[in-house]
Image (cartoon, rainbow, N blue to C red; front, side, top):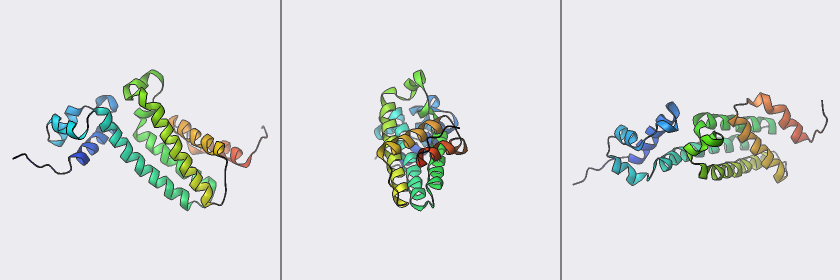
Length: 182
């Protein structure tokens, strides 16, 4: 009779998260994760058909947690500035945990170049959604172009490790329509 194993999927995701966080994407192997979980490699492949799928499972779980926190921050923000800061800081936290997703140029082939544009599009869409919730909760409406610009800026600046203090003035000018040059 086959041995029943509890929580294989959860254990594999947790072990993969540990490797990704401490050693990076290159160090992640299906054989290592199977060993850490005390299962055969073939059993792991029953749950995750590839290294990319396993990595995607980690990223999706982590992103869903970050996105939920962003939504709570957006819904409870006392001001646009406080909401933007909270959303941005959550994004920085996500980028720090998954920096291998935010590599540039030739390095992208290691994390799935084909998926980069799709991942970026999904991030952009969900960030626009949470920004819309922020503005709506403060009884303010912004054009879609402003939401997209802010979302792209959050992705770009967090990927380059800017602090919120470094970009706050630019966001403030955009949101108040300030076209003065200093």
